[in-house]
Image (cartoon, rainbow, N blue to C red; front, side, top):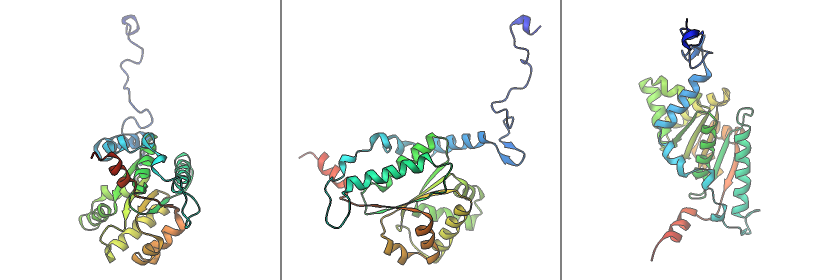
Length: 244
């Protein structure tokens, strides 16, 4: 009867968007891959990242903003140095699912650390990975919420996201609490092989001075260090775009 009326034989059967978990989001006690895909899409849509990444992505990357001239105290020009860092960043993206690499961007303000972090975030989000972006100050606020208000969902997001980007490490108020909780977060993510990308305006000596030995050893031992240098490109752009 169904066939004679041009309906498929399974017309009355239950149909699911995901046949693996039957739209429950779980296979046994484990989250299904479709759960993660929905979470990535939902987080991306409702986060500040969506608007930021419309402009801050590899399509708008301009190496010509960086000087091609080398100074005596460095081995490479700012432009060549950044080209090498971008190459490392693409390797990080392409091998994301198979490597245990984390990245640490160091350098003065305005040298492209945050911009490149956004570029990496967009590439990984577009590939279905859950990327969470936090400034160091916002992250410490989150850690207080987790500790004192039992924010389990927030804790799960920070720990189990595929990539946690911590921007501007060193700009937060550094206290015994912040150092302890930051170490705990770094350590558990490293143990679970959940990757991180951290940027800071601090130099290595300043990091060693401001943070505990346990944090410093994780940063220096478990992260690929990328040193940014050159003029503040934001100042250069503002001068170029200014009308007199």
